[in-house]
Image (cartoon, rainbow, N blue to C red):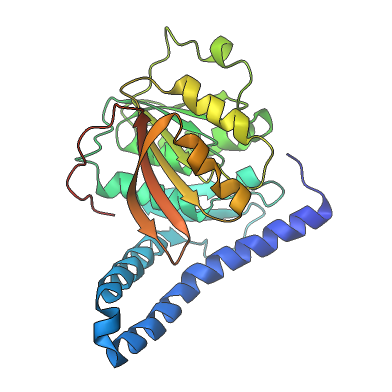
Amino acid sequence: MDLTSSQHNHLQNELVREWEKQEGSLVILKDIKQKIEECPLQYEGKLIWEKEDEEIVAEIMRRRFFPALITHKAWEGFHFAGHEIRITEATDCYGAVVWPSALVLCYFLETNSKQYNLVDKNVIEIGAGTGLVSIVASLLGALVTATDLPELLGNLHHNVLQNTKLKCKHQPCVKELSWGIDLEKNFPKPSCHFDYILAADVVYHHPFLDELLLTFDHLCRNDTVILWAMKFRLEKENQFVGRFQTLFDLEVISDFPSLNITLYKAMRKGRMKARPSKVTV
C-alpha cells in the first residue's frame, strides 16, 4: 500500500479537505440556521437535525489537539476515555492517518459505554490503522485485538503500546490481518469468538471490497455486534452497504451529514434484537 508521489500529494490534499470540511461545516450550518429563521415552517424539522449535527461534530472535534512544538515525528493528540492519547502518524499511506470516522466511533464508544459495555468483552478492530479506536476500546476495559496489513503493524504496535501500557485492564494485542487471506488459519472459528467487531473507514477506493465482506463474514458469530463508521464518498464504495446487507441486518445508529459519515450497528441476519432506545452520539 506504498503510495507514489502523486498519490501522496492527493492524500495530503484530501486530508486538508477533510478537516476544512469539519471546521467549515459549522459556518455552513450557521448559514442554514439563518435560512431556517427566515422560513421556520419549511425548515422546522431540519433545524433540530442540523443543530444536533453541529453540536456533536463540534464536540468530537474538540477531542483533537496538536503538539505545541513541532518535532521530527508527526503526531496528533486526542482526549478519550479520561486519557490523553498521542498518535504517531505518517502521510505516506492511508492506514497511518487518523480519519474522521475513527473519531466518530471513539466518541460513540465513550459516550455510550453503559449501553455498549466493553468491559471484559473480546473485541477485534479490522483496518485499525493508527490504532486510535483500539486504544479507546482498551481504555474502556475491552480485551482488544488490533489488526491491519503487515506494513502498518510497526506504527500500530507503537501507538497501542505507548497509550495503553499500565493503563488498561487487558493489554491489547496487535496482529496481522490481510482481508480475505488465511482467515481460518489465523483466526480459527472454533477458538476465535469476538463480542464486537469495530471498523472505521474501511470502505474507500480500494480493490479489496470482496475480501472485506468475506472477513466480516468469517469473524462474525451469531451474537457478534459490528460497530462500523463509514464515510460516503463514491457510488462504487457506497454500493458495498447493499452487499453487506445480504449477510447482515443493518441499523443506523447515528448520521453526521456535515461529515458524510454514518455510524452503523450490524448483526447476523435475524439476530438483531428490537431497536434499543436512542443512544447518545
